[in-house]
Image 1 (tube, rainbow, N blue to C red):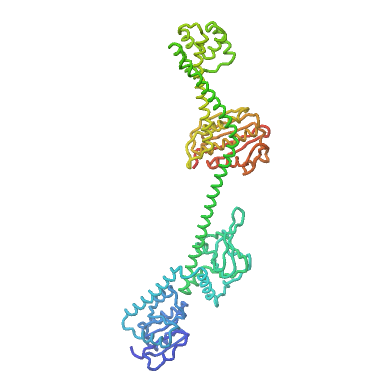
Image 2 (image 1 turned 180 degrees about the vertical axis):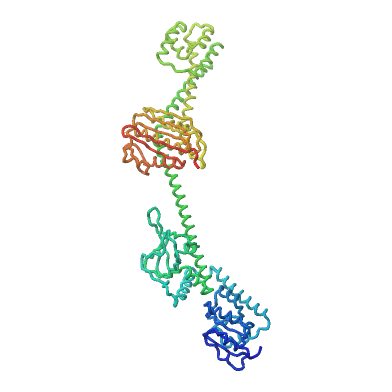
Length: 620
């Protein structure tokens, strides 16, 4: 390469005077615009330096491509001059189109500029140029990657300040559309359910996010300076989730998608910075959503616990009302057992030490066994049968005693006649009466023990806890157990039960038993001292199939103006003297709803009140 070759600099910036020195290896040629073909024909170019700022327009890019395609310049090396470092996108584009060997900077001193020009004046080997390009590209990509993934270098506020400062710098002399704006209070930025075409940077002031829920406007969040508004709908294209409204005078930067792309293309430093900000913004929103969900879950758990306590409280309140009646019910069989055991204790020695013959002992044993199945007789029946047996037993008193122990019955009468004769029938019948009394009281003890077991079973079921998972149960049995618990209160009332044939039902049986108890107890309270209680169950085969339970009373009925309130919490119609928490029917409704059923009420004043519980068999 000889000194007749030219150095062409296409730039509006001043360059060192030393480049024009006569000892330089080139002919110095600087122009502010790309030369035309006539001018180029007068030079043999070896090195071309182009200001990147001129390559922003497609016309200048085309001019440079034309320049480098000419026979006199096709072997020339190319350098670029840049006021600031181009973006990674720009760098890749320029490398692909013009294969520059180096990018000069205004920060380089005059001597450094001249050194770089001399260094690239003639390039002997193409592979040196390729290595340089690869190195430059690798450095830019590494820097881009480092900035892109460095999430901890800056705090949220520092990151926001840098992004907003960069945006204001970008729009300083380039804001023809007035995208840097100031709004007064109550200005709408984004609207819920509407498309959002803008990304809003809050530079100063405050914006509140609001959402409509059940005809109410709820405040979701307040966004301060440094926040992004509309980010999710702007990025995804979805409709706005909330409405954003300024609460005071607020400075914002409003970007549409075209302007947003221009901003990012303006600097390789701004893309990772903004991406980091956007990711943090979404991350904070996600963290807040998770925290809100956890808080709501904790609140729901507390409500579930309070609901369980409420049900338990209502159950114990009803149980407390039943205690006196249950105690009375238990007292009667316990007293009967006590009397029976005392009688057996007295009669047993007489039986064991009895001087009766073997035949008479066998007859006594049969009387003891027969006492377990002996049906009680009316007074008139005893009188009639005693009169008919006087000839057999000698006198009316002895005959009456013999008849009362069943000795006049055909099988026992025949065995009595076959016993060896005795001079004292009264003594024999008294001895045989001890056998009968022992059997009779053993029977009473057995019946009373069964009654106590029945009461205890009902209480245990009512006061117990359901298993966590539903189980198969017989609803008719649950209603019958409830009637056992309430038996003391049922005295004086007419009770009619029509149990239909029901399939076993997957449910929480103890919870449903609480429903039956509440509804029956309410019916008895309403009827006060007399009336008719009707209970029916029915399986209805339909689509879907269900079980219907109806509990009806002949009480005074419920007034139409309050019938809609009876399921409300703390609402009670109990008269003075009748204890009521006002939670019984609320609990009933919740338990039935838990089984995906429904509870309905029908009533006519002075006629009846009817509760209808419908429970679907398929609870999916």
